[in-house]
Image 1 (tube, helix red, strand yellow):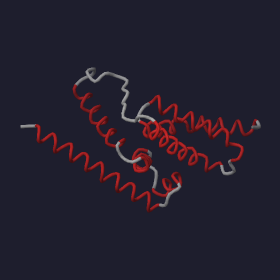
Image 2 (cartoon, rainbow, N blue to C red; image 1 turned 60 degrees about the horizontal axis):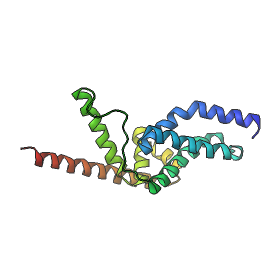
Image 3 (cartoon, helix red, strand yellow; image 1 turned 30 degrees about the vertical axis):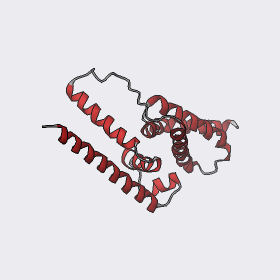
Image 4 (tube, rainbow, N blue to C red; image 1 turned 90 degrees about the vertical axis):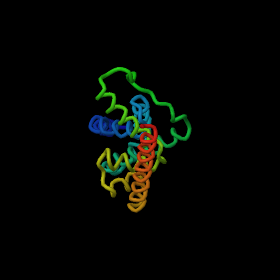
Length: 171
């Protein structure tokens, strides 16, 4: 790779790595795995960098590669293990309740099929429009809407079932 292309790649990584790491975290749910995911995809991007003609398409390429790589990791590894930075017994009660609620929502989100989860992460965590999501994932806008609708319905169903279980246990 020539020096100009190398500088362009470094500039892209410097400018977009924080946002891409956030997306990677939302896709895999663990900071270490998110860093691995982003690094893996950036290596793939570096290799293909000289062939990329449209600089505006780079971020979409990287995001799609992250979704595809996370999907293949999810299929190939155990995804049920949940690593945490702190033990649950530390912190005050309000902090614990907030953390438990986030963890519960994340568990429900991770239980969704990969494409539904990717659409919901890109739409509601990244704030991307349907057209952007369709472009990044290389699917139609209708498929984006379908995945979002099914994913949200599944989350609502899971939360409703969880609430019903809590009510059944509580006298």
